[in-house]
Length: 179
Image (cartoon, rainbow, N blue to C red; front, side, top):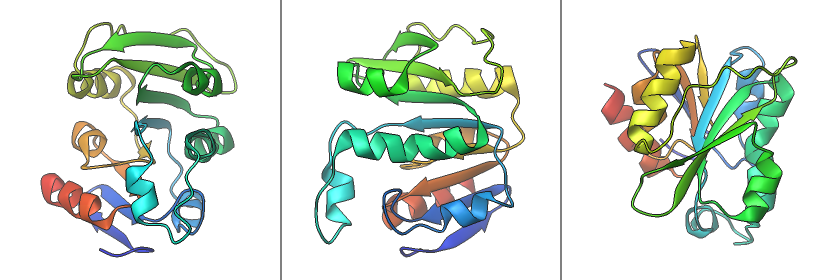
């Protein structure tokens, strides 16, 4: 896998690109519409910086870029993140739960559906790996979008996914885990 690639393993598609720059994700989503989004937002700029020529990464700009497909397709979106006020302000949580991950962590439901509903499962105190499974079991989405796939936990918990990341090595690991 290299930057700009799209590869499929079973019912999971992996897209390598930069959400704030060049990525084939936008074009791919035009024909592969997700019905739910779930991603883990990074605590630092390190990964994105390591794959950019200019090395500039603003976390709030990155978060807005990560949320753009959810806005475009009016998706219920779950985000695992650190509970920083500036991040939570952008996410505008419809619901929020403390979770376990080793560091202080929250899971936020950002409801961008045309008609937001208070139909969220209780994720209080769960480890993030358990929370993603509960969300998938609760909503049973046909296609889940993970814009910051890392090593593929969302893909593993879902029946069908589109997983995007800037790091080709992480996507290769995710692909191996999904085989």
